[in-house]
Length: 147
Image 1 (cartoon, one colour):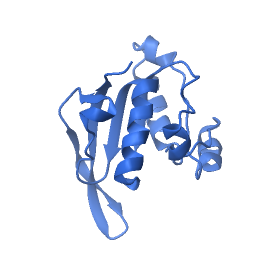
Image 2 (cartoon, helix red, strand yellow; image 1 turned 90 degrees about the vertical axis):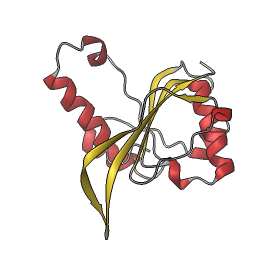
Image 3 (spheres, helix red, strand yellow; image 1 turned 30 degrees about the vertical axis):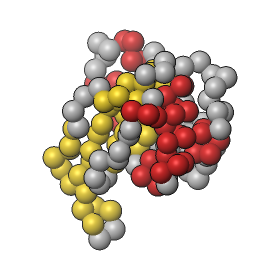
Image 4 (cartoon, helix red, strand yellow; image 1 turned 180 degrees about the vertical axis):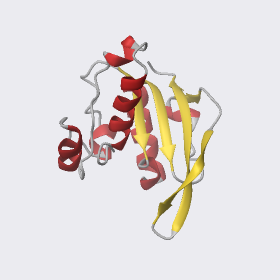
């Protein structure tokens, strides 16, 4: 769920101010969102795949080289329990790390989906507005047990 490229822009901005991280500077960024791919491309100048959660759950990532990190930004809470479990299991087979960003309570990522917690939850101090509600950004890092 690459949205309008906010995470990509933030990562690129961080790289510009931290040149000592040469390995990160060589990173390849793949983006995906069936609803916002055009907006992502317009804002970042990069292309985005249009895969749905269903396609990921069905294994569209299976033929690709493993990702080092997958960022699930403000999206996994949109899935029902069965779809969430299938999507997380497919991501666990395709990525070494999973960073989950959510605007509200922590999403339950169960061990049976192929992930184990790798760090304590980080909660950004500042609040952001989302309609009539204010949220804190919560981040959780998981390590794949399948890769």
